[in-house]
Image 1 (cartoon, rainbow, N blue to C red):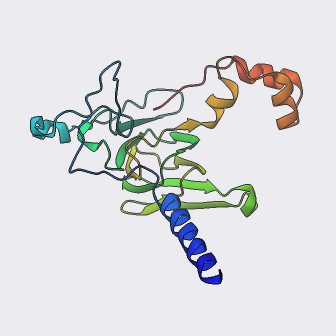
Image 2 (image 1 turned 45 degrees about the vertical axis):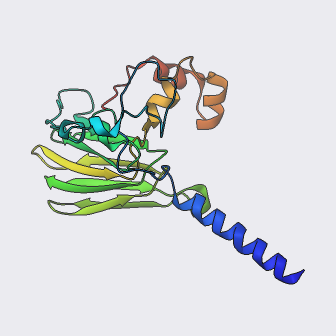
Length: 223
């Protein structure tokens, strides 16, 4: 009886460990190039796969260009994920290029399916992320210069601000082929349909006029 219980507990721990360590499903073949069909009948890891024998080098290639930072945020995120590189399907990785005008901001946001590792290529960035309620919403922040690397844990709110007078840009790798992005201001004040002001006034402990003002703003999406 005792031996059986130990085996069951070990099996449960192994299963929990497997689930916790695998955010994107593990591939069962060398590659599964996404077809990106409008109405796929069968999907694998979110995308329909084409016959591996038909794979071409272009399925694994993408030329990422500088983003246009002439917008209210002064930043632009350009992804290189499964939609841009079909060969990434099932491989559990992607990246983005982030361009910043002087004092440009990549606003507070989260990636629900991926940890981010950012490296500064040019410029000086103030970066940070906020831990969960369990860790007292602690802010971890640092000024990064060219060549510096900083990690943003999966699902946590984070940001980057160009604190220099020159343009800056960074490259970030993400631990998902499709990490997703939730920009906090957009999600709260520009949802469709709008969140009830009763919810937002209580959540932020402000009066209705402030919430009405925020919901009327044109929230720019830099992704």
